[in-house]
Image (tube, rainbow, N blue to C red; front, side):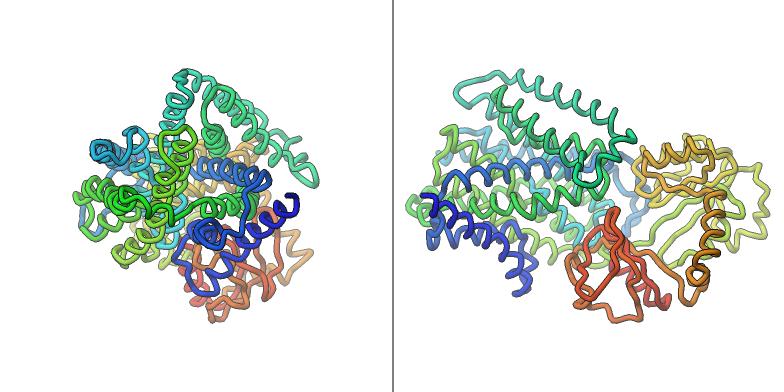
Length: 615
């Protein structure tokens, strides 16, 4: 028994390891890795060679993988996406872009209402007895498929990309909570749904505890070396909330999902997120997905004519439930873009597996019905991203200029706008009437906008916060700090503030705001001139300057520099990954989130930046 246990575990681990290698070798990157893992599980499991014997080892690791998957699903939710009205640019049709949050909410309500009607039809036809469960299954959307597909298409930051993402986020959040309510009502006849309030109350309390200790200096000290207090805190949070979930009779996955949401709200640094992703998707989660395939017996599905009929009907229902509500986007977008969005939103996986697992466990559906639901989810995850790529207009996937807003017209901001590449950056300088600026002399060189003051309402009225990057460089450092904090709250990803006092510098660092300080800059330059004058000459010489490129294109994720297809005159000088500084070699792999320091001819650098920086 012990031998069989270890043998099965080794087989599953080997399959999880080899699956992405085989996808890369046979150039099948269009298939999501999690789907491929389920397919490989089918081959080695009950539907194939039946090489794996289920035991306590695999059951425990699979359950932990499922819990961690739900945690990462909650962590994946970016709550800054719920900030409304950030983009006011015009669409190619000439119309003003819609409010992403309102449009996403309207469409999801349409999806949920239509899912309810389709579920009623399935109930009347005798396919399933519980209409509530089928409604959740039809209305759910897979963030795990939607997010990488949007990144690969380079439209994540566009209005249509944000709408698609928000619909998936809302669907993920709502269906997860309703699934917990469903389980608490139908499991063993218990209906103490009010006990869920205990779980959410615990979550709120843990959030405030985490917020209180998050930026303490001793936490940063304990986060290094063998202590890694941040990672310990995350796993403690998961286990505590999972334990509370099970104690009150809810599903453990709700506790794990809530833990992910709390960590997301606490805004962990990228290094922490990379650690959690590496552990989850590198070990536990692949075991779970392979075991989903192992347990699924496809051949048993074809013994029941009702199940055979259910599979195409459910796939059709998933399409209808997304395509019809998404037509609301026709008010702003063309039919191809709208239909492409509808197909992508049809993809569903993790929550269908969760729903089917729970439904089978509490006896509402049979194992054959559960298998059919999971099979349809796998099919949608393979088919719908392909249709999205075929339908989505190519011109909308082109890299857009980054909009940079400078607040204050002075010797710091004016020269910088002239130095930035106009093909990559669209710059605007906002200044108040009191600032001495010869507008007639400079408006041909600079894009200047005069405003009455730098008050938050004034900036909002002038659409200052509709930008990718904001540089607060007025003559008042307190005003710069105030503007920078408002910009971060508004959801601006890159904020730069000119401050000098230690207290303000510390506040900016706590809120992940980059700092410009004349004193610090001068000290750094003088020290560099003394210690490394050659580097300073490199930084100031236009022919061999250093440039930073953010690696956001998932197409090149985990590709070694030796195999990197870009053949321009570029030298990779350094790679910053989280807090690590990596000296690049031929075998060094690029990873999404890397900050690349390169040198070379300007035109080649710009080409590389367009290829890598925009996702």
